[in-house]
Image 1: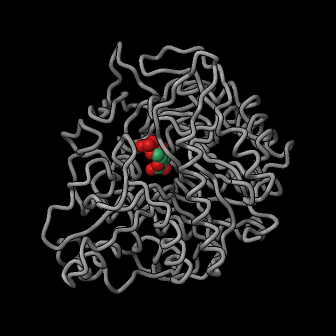
Image 2: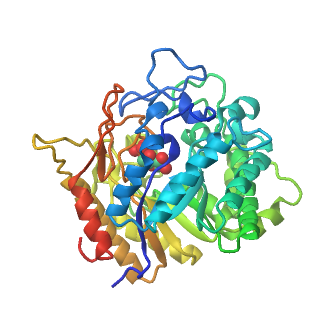
Image 3: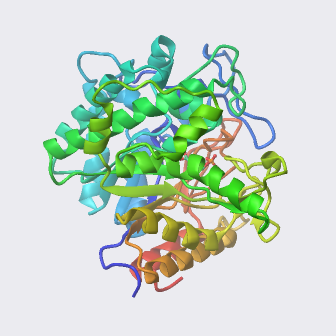
Length: 477
Ligand code: BG6
């Protein structure tokens, strides 16, 4: 049996994409709350001032805030061993700078965690999942400023102290490496440069993004150290968007161009977070891109002393790199890359590549030799309710099955795989497109892009399938 006996099967969500209740019980406004709905072809907009009559999908989302009990009960019915969710920073510190945390916000997470523990589900908490408090964007331009480090630490300390003995696994920043490209500047770091309107094409200042990443690395390292001091049982991981790229051809020019791309996009952030120092190859990248990262005395030491305990990543797609062609051709692929003629793509243009997961897991484990977890994977698809009320999502089952088969291969190859939490185990708002129509869940939620829907939940065909997968520890697929 390739998977460990205590393999962590489960699913993942983020606060801003499922909770709703955006201004309830003292919650502040986060960067996600000023993003409008969008579609695959019409990018969502960023509106620093909320517009009357505009639909903001995070405001109600699927209202997990009021449905968490029934939702977690459904996850338990599938046999979940772990549930990955994020705490929304703005529920705890509404503007990020209050003296005292917001007790009502904490009470909500007390209830969510207790509900998980009731069913013996291990909570896996992301501390920052695209939810920078808007007030910190307005005052500091988000992670571009060093002030963010102390504010983030204060927020994490509250959680580490409160959930000691209840929670074991934490992740610092969701897809931290998304900020190696323009797209992640606002989404992940809360950096909003004047003139930005379009979510997918923000006004970009690379210097700020990379300076922001440095601040996040220092924050991550300090938080890892603090977590271990508060509870030696705590395990803190990094979280990367891993979209490996293949050379488009075996022309050595393509191979070298591809290596260069992968180093910066896929490896840079985890090299720092796992090994505790900047990799040598970034010197040249910074020089060629006129980026100068300002470090303070002591930062090198902090990074060294705050290496993560485990490595986690999201895996949705791969692409190809050519030394000659424009890499933006693979439309829909978030981090660029050309279309791979051997792969099919989802309706949103994400190239589906199960074998790439085997390859990626091997690459990751060979490089770091620490436990690894796939904390996001899944197929965003249009689902249809049949006349008899069922949802026959065989395409989703097929996608997940093939990815699990490839995880097995990587385990057979010797990798230390801790668990698997497919994304959006319950339907939620899409992060890139801002729409409900792109569904990932085992559980369908009646919520639509015009804001209608009674929020009722129903099981899809994949619900029973995944239940059997978990029951059999991945043997019955
Ligand atoms: C990851 C994010 O990028 O992919 C999630 O961590 C996101 O927040 C997921 O939802 C799927 O992307 P999308 O754009 O289809 O929601």
